[in-house]
Image (cartoon, rainbow, N blue to C red; front, side, top):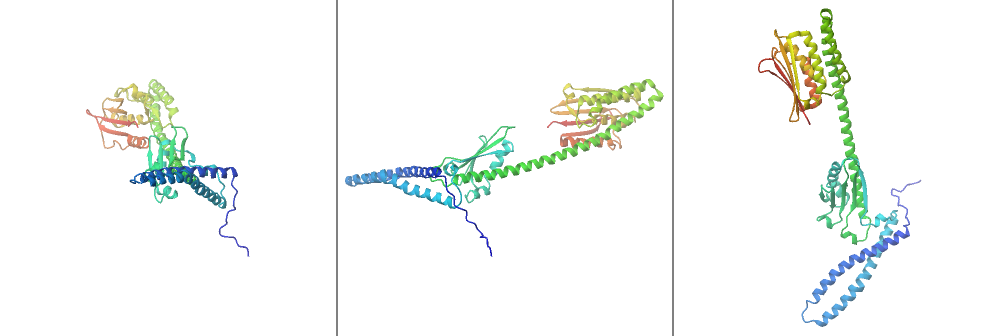
Length: 430
């Protein structure tokens, strides 16, 4: 019966002889540098102790000789050869048995990786700080807990290590750089530290790759989340535009049917007035038709439409209707929802002037003050009644304002000081 082993031992690999030779020499040099530093410190301590002994010139002279021999010959030669060479050979054998070929990055004390973030610089830096300060990265690096880190937001730099002070330990640096509209580069590298003087066993490269893997995963996760939010916003915007178009489509027939009914009556009774009304209707439609399905217009265009509308209504009502329009030049260029001002003027005529038994006037003013556009429609008709605000026009305006601007826009309908009604529409800039 054939059986398959649960664990398969990888096949040994042969290292590149040139790299293996470089690795052994590099290990000897690193060990020699470390032993030299330690030797100088120990030699200085021994000499200080030796010459602190009183009245022992012979002992001092002999001690000086042996110290020179040991730290001048034995320590800097034999120790690196024995320790450095043996550790390097053991590491090469370990890699070979594990099936991992030696690479230049394994030999380096300062390996690096470069990631390209799909996020903007600020979001990228925030993701880096949140990720590197978490428990997952610290545990993956073998710290036994969250990494100790130091960061500088103005430089876009983060340093992490197993303990404080960070710069003296096996420190990994993450540097975020990039400008708005350009790809954001995240450079991960091992900083120079005391571990430079030890034999490299691939720990520096493993730490850099571990940090890079965690950051790459977080960038992808954040990017997916932002894309999902953007898709949701696009769907909401599409639904909003569809609803606004439906509401606006309701407004257009509301005005058009009333106008055509008036025109039909005048054709039978007053041909000249009918001609004037038709001219104003054509002017209105020439301005309105290109933007009938747009969710935005300008105040200047809407006032032109209102002027044509009021001219039509003035033909119908005769001397009973007067109107006056006044707007700042700065306010005229401001964006304004189409067909909304017409609804306010229609309400003023229908619920105010038509119910009054006297002549009336409509005054429209528009000003831009403190980043807020304020449009006011005033009439001197019958004033507020129980039916006021229950019609289609005002409810349509309230709903459209909420859909377009949220809390940044409002409509108030109040009684005028000398009778009539004042409707004030306010739109605040972001």
